Length: 356
Image (tube, rainbow, N blue to C red; front, side):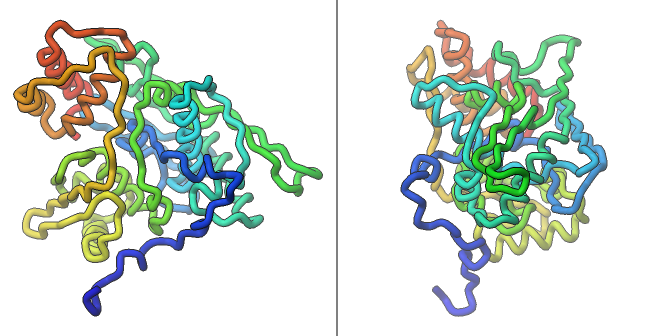
């Protein structure tokens, strides 16, 4: 390495569990997953300080409100619990096993999975995170209905209200101060429907080694909007709005410059133009496409992708292809005119969600 050149690894937390326990190898090897709707909208606070204020976010025709409890809004670190749960449910689905909204697990496995310590304070933090996840209410018109229709058409609109976690049970040995034996949580139907429809993206394991909440959020946005594309530009002010961070644009600009300088985000590198105030994500080529089953397994004409890009400007067209094929499978549809059907799907997707 050239002298005085920043080492990206110095900006990451240490890998606390490089030698995974043999008895939890299935957990250590599980694919990290996150729900795409959660990645697109800032459900989680980027500060560890309790935040009890109500937030409202709007993107195109979609909107959501985050309503915290008296203990504060769920944080982006609390979200690790849901990432772990999603990963376990997806692993079961891939093995053809039955799944339900209730998931029982050993919290020690979770702490190792998300690169945390396994001391008493870490278990206490786990319990506090459960309380914030259960207390935070999401109110939104973004649905993950099991019938495959994201939003109603015409002048009708569904409004859903749900907790990120509906219920939780913790079993301890020798009373309240004893060792935790297992935990069982019930996730919301909204999240469970998203999992069953496999509306998920793979996350890099080093996500859990990012030190700052804003770094995690910027990575999530890059993973969603850049996806498999070689690069993707976005205005600095728009990127700040999508993070949900309550910070001045000047300070956020400094944060982006630091990310460019140290270049330690997984999967993506960043460049920043001070003249135009535009951030560009560059794909490192380290992630793989998650194939989805489909009722139609043919190949689309290459010209269809150009038309699809025009129908849904700004969206990752290959991600939309995966969504489309998954939708075909869920609804058992074999299109007579695949290219026209795909382009119409992309146009409808853009009309419902706007430009990313």
